[in-house]
Length: 347
Image 1: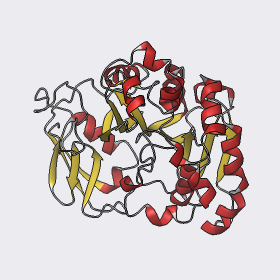
Image 2: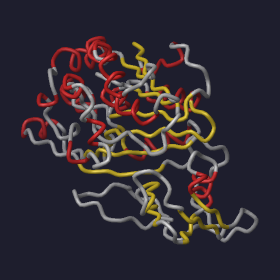
Image 3: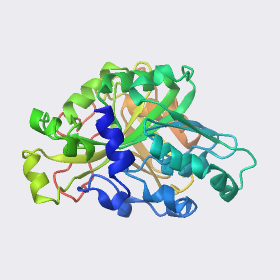
């Protein structure tokens, strides 16, 4: 699979227009505040971009960020602008051709961003073998990845190493492809479907179990959309499996509970996160309007109180009294089945 993926992304694909599904490269999903940052990225780097979502969480100034499967470096160079000169972005990829594109334009971006020092680095390696790259434990505030984890043959190792590399209170914020059922062998072993990020997709329920097994107790879905396989022959080979592109955030916080528990807590958003003056969107079900008291479960309270988001909220309550399960929480497939994303009702 390593050789298949390296050949597909290093040699066969010459640009995003060569892809056969909508799993990647939907520019319409890029928010307005990110578009000016993208205009500063070199055209060759942009043309070799094969991601499937957004991997730029807020409040990155001064952060150390690791990008898994960075490819030609598009997201690294966007993140470089967000972390600033006090921060650092490291990109890891196994495809030499892609890294060559990223490295070729390193000086161009430093000058374009006006940075006195180079705040990016690139490493050749496999995302399931991060332990072989000499990266210290608890050395990153945020780990990101854009449509790459599905390509790894050892997703257990990826999640295990991400948890190890994150600082306490850090987060894994990443986009990937998920299936609405376990992918059958004929899809999993199809080279084209694997290269298009479908064959290696996890069933969403298996992903949640995997994340929890490696210490990410309460995975939060940020956004999702169904994938259209527009090529009829390719759709036939997909054997009726439904695929979704989804962005998750996984926090490294000890003691998160397996369910959303109610302790009578609430938060008030101060409206101070850049680009989020009116409302702060933690995930698909927590769209917090500035200035209003917003009831939250214990896990959400901690995700805001014990992370870099704390200065931007007022916190009401504690954990002294438990009121049972937070109303509205359930356990069904979290993804919308059509292209229109409806607001959720959990927590």
